[in-house]
Length: 198
Image (cartoon, rainbow, N blue to C red):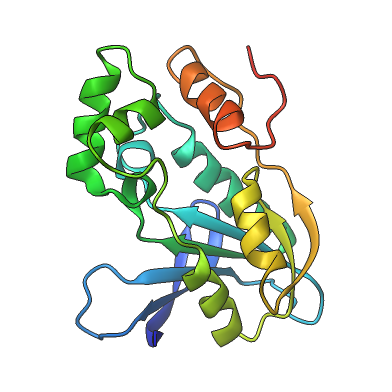
């Protein structure tokens, strides 16, 4: 069972947030995080984003995905409207950065993101959002608006004890490098994306 290991207020360029680390072990260097906007009203449906770690997109601003931009957009949205970002340590759809770079190498040879993972003998998507539900329960959140384009995340909430009040789209315009990635998200994973050819 995970539990709160540490928490503190952290000022960011998007506003001030309460950052809470969750893990089974206090010595875990990679805990899951809840990033709670300071104006969050827990008596109303809480805006929530389940966000999986993406070092290439968030730290190094890779143009191959929109993960970093989605995180920034979610922080801006929750700062303005209240809410929580559940930051999950599931790099590369939970295959890890080494395998992710191997998959990138295969993509350079023409494979899409799913084909590359399967070629490496890995699942197309190995993420588990059950821990996000566990964190929401620990924070005593009962009712949420989910910021997502991913129907799998919606399914996790619908099948949980948490009420899904609404889904809030979080779509980032494609660039030349991310068009194929977003097309795979829509065609293979069924992400709820508008045609995004700009």
